[in-house]
Length: 590
Ligand code: GTP
Ligand code: SPV
Ligand code: MN
Image 1 (cartoon, rainbow, N blue to C red):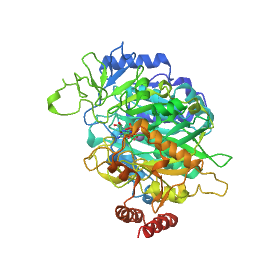
Image 2: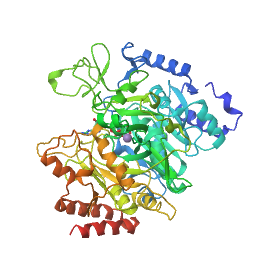
Image 3: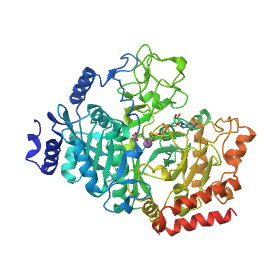
Image 4: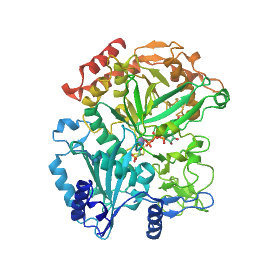
């Protein structure tokens, strides 16, 4: 074992001790402390090409970009194998799988025992958020996957500067990860929020393995945020500038694979661009926010890169994402063309040569060539719309919070909550059809409050109470909205064009924030008057107009009964204020 002497004399003694303890358990051949340098990254990429972990893509069209094919049984988050291990079961809540901490540790110890024999153990110090931001938090991930290291280098501020901050702060989240043998029966993602610890075994994929992302920045951070008075959310953050030059920032929570990356990188329709509207990107997946001295909520993006859904990304739907992917990107489980360029469904009309498993693509088999949850990893700095404000240590002030789901029926294009408490109910009542981002059935409607069902590190009842607690006398809270880009017509087609045209809905929100337009009052909230939404150049059928801007009292009566039942599942811990809000709405629906 080498390389550790350098830190043994320093204040990082406790970290060194933990690393040695992990090494005694997992028995790696080598320990490598990652400094995040270019030379280190190049060496790792060389090694991964040599052992087949990475496949080099066409250097002319995609310089310094690589394809990784994960194990076919390891292609998405595994919610049924993800646990929150709090001392008291109720603290994890009905929204989480729970295991007693001692039992979980025993089980994980036996899996980790000797699992790194013959492998290198990488020690990856990282910072979630700008290195110099008071809102940022650090972590150290120990992993035996070079692919994880290469991804963490893009997704976080990884290496020497993070280690220096850890030395200064003295606190960090401990993450231990091994790909193990990738046997799905020996796969667990364990969280110990009380000890700021994560243990993940048996998966090398995305949110299961890049521990800074969902495990730290959402599950552990949400728990920490509750006790420290801030919020860790599954939200994109975008900047929006109007022709007068006024800047606003919007945070939006949509469940996995429901449009965050796309909205964060939106390019407005031509007319808007001509008039001087501009959208900038702060983050596409995670948002940490807390009240500032002026009472507004200030937000940072704790991540430094995008781990985005590839399928559906095209020059038409998301040109900013495509532009980001021109170089220095890692693609996971996409297909390739005959000249070795990455390809996925929806990209363009070419026919790929090789599918995501590495087999010759059979067009007639009727199966997608790229996995539906195939992803790209790329630095946020490569995105043309990336905002310099994303590096601001103070964060950006949030003017509107948007909740949204994938709802084929009932839910209109947009509505606004009456006030903060109603807004919390709108978030708590979110439902969405499941997607390929997690294993399991796709297209099944489930409650996914605030898009945090898979990611809240504590009891949802306490989480909603925490949200309600921000309504203080001196608070200047954002307005709360709900959107649905996925409403379908009787023929099964999407009624709203979506993507760039979502700008029209953002503009209406800003008009509401500025108090420039009134609304249709309904029991579910404020719906736009259709004439207040700029629909110039959008062709909407009569059915679309009715379904996108109307409201179906009978349908909502059923929905609210189901929301009431959902809140009751949490028993007496559910805040009365939220139940009262639900009952009041249910009553006004008749
Ligand atoms: P995670 O990274 O899993 O958290 O996903 P995400 O919320 O960032 O979702 P993303 O923006 O990657 O979109 C997922 C899928 O939804 C893609 O296939 C998109 O093409 C599709 N999508 C995004 N925005 C829209 C929209 O406005 N309308 C329609 N119809 N589809 C959309
Ligand atoms: C999601 O599923 O919400 C993602 C992808 O952003 S993962 O990192 O795998 O969680
Ligand atoms: Mn996500």
